[in-house]
Length: 256
Ligand SMILES: Cc1ncc(COP(=O)(O)O)c(C=O)c1O
Image (tube, rainbow, N blue to C red; front, top):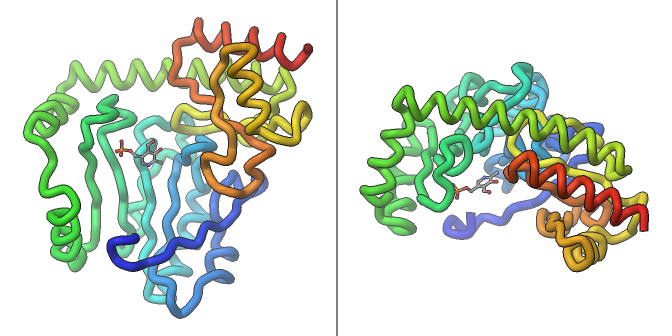
């Protein structure tokens, strides 16, 4: 965005919207200078996806104004609910999908991803990519090819099931502890929990928790200003025994 001289406008989205944009807000906030709307589904930090109907309405609103819809679908492979596990690409050629080998394919740090763009945008994006990165490393590209072997895909599916089990455990545990997760994450490996019962600052809560109970959660402030002190993010990429230990420590921490 900065390379094109564009400015991003962050819009808040609450639990009643699954922490996702809605078409009415997009329409109301669109200005003559607006060129595109960007969302992430499933989202980091909430693990929630946009309802397909709402996404369709957003695409329609953007299209009516000559704009594009960009959807970061990096966690789409890690979906646990068939109602949401659909790529936005089916909605038309004016939808751009952003993806990467970092999450489902477990290649975090290899710096390899992809975009699906309308044919007219291939050349301008190539220019941008050549100036920003030149090219993806050969070793990362060879490793990525191995991701599509049957043996690898079986491992990814096992991991997805393991993440689903961890989600079911940790969301239940957080709700019991009083760190309520207002919307069940349907994808990714994050739970977005409300700590307002225990603190009016998720930053202080996370700091105290880290120093006293040695559990690391991420305060809302890291993800933008909307309700930043109310929420914190838990990553369930850790193993189930680690999550069980974390839940026990969290429970002791909030009761003291
Ligand atoms: C929603 C989302 N998009 C993109 C990325 C960046 O991924 P990559 O490792 O491909 O740069 C992340 C990483 O955490 C993410 O959560």
